[in-house]
Length: 580
Image 1: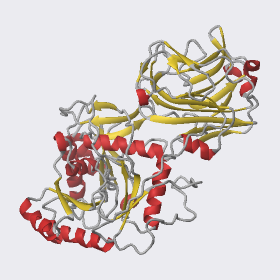
Image 2 (image 1 turned 90 degrees about the horizontal axis):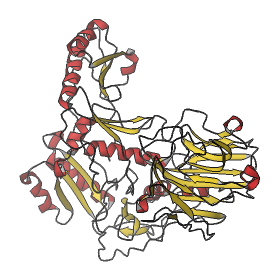
Image 3 (image 1 turned 180 degrees about the vertical axis):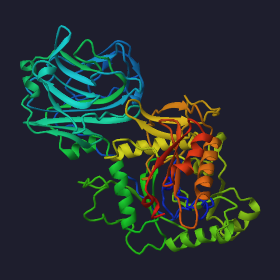
Image 4 (image 1 turned 60 degrees about the horizontal axis):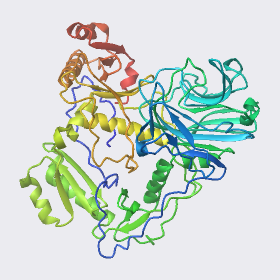
């Protein structure tokens, strides 16, 4: 996925011509869905299997990957099978689907008896239409319509709570922002650990809340007797049943360490960051994920001076969230049969000189190295008369592809134009873990591939995609971009499910027309002594076009008049544009 360029800032000196798309330099963030070619002498080594499951202290594990029946099978070896009540819709590796009206899993009675420490660990996908209040799980007792001693976690507002009686005596382990909610429409890995007086709540392996004065132990609830141990159901009869999906629900009789929590959460994101770090530190050409059994693959240049079978691990490395690895992932090593690093740069320069001589942007161009086939891939709309000399000059080293969109989807250049009018998709709460980053990259990829105007986070519904008013596709069945990988070369196993809607006011062309009119008016109002700046963005939340400028109302009022109910003027200081 390509990241969006920053918002263009236009001054009265004139409007900038569209900037041609920047070509990529051997980034290696490609090559999915292709077979790994084993050229002569590559001596590729087989990757090791994924990290082993953490089983020490495991007292219950429901994978919830059954395909039929009413039994949630316990794979911990402790014979703690659960009973599925209500409507059971099994989705295999996508978990058990809860309908929000009667589906829940009943765990064995007194499952927390004797526990002074605990870990509750599971994956959940919350339906965007989920009401509140609700429990993701609750273990304890019920008296009449009220909970009476329990441990539970909810996504609204995200917290784990314990009580010896009811809600009036609960102790919350909750983020400092008490309004924080779990994003809906995408998978989340949730973990609660407690030992002694310390309870910690994690999301996707990242700590979200900690309480160091918890006075209730799991085993003390109900004096060890708990008869209402549910997944997907609250212990309060007036609360909502859970609506969404669950999978891999685990209970431990101890508090997992932070590194163990991260492992259970699926350290894929951390591991891919590590793979990229190894690639960069050792001067490799690329890293990619191979699906045919090799796993992560790092390709080294053909003139690599070191021992490419034994690359070094970067010392003192941490990921962008401050995680320090306790181990490094296994990966397959390979060496290019065709390219040194200098060869790649020279070839990319030659391609650019041929397709876009002297910066001519008549033809679109994207150049990248694909390590899985050991070739440079050129995506362009240039005719064969332009590209044929390249394939003749560099036989076996180039793959020329049309950048026309497959199956009528948005072509890259169309996506780039759309990205010019909207901000990138991102959660309102920011990104504190790799899995969240991955899923929001996927949201943006869905928007780009399906020609949406914008994507944004709605705390009540999760990711939202807004489409043009004249969109003719099916917004309820979004196509997933084939062979898509993240910026860390990850191949996602799950895709978020955004809420979708059409703009009530705008086609893409209408937004672009307003953008042009705003730039022309504000730039045209400048004089020798003034130089007004302007940025124009589409606000999908409010279905408006927002114009930020330091121009006075006398300049901007005609825009509001010309586009009633469609344009919002935000006045900013001239300093906002000083670095443009």
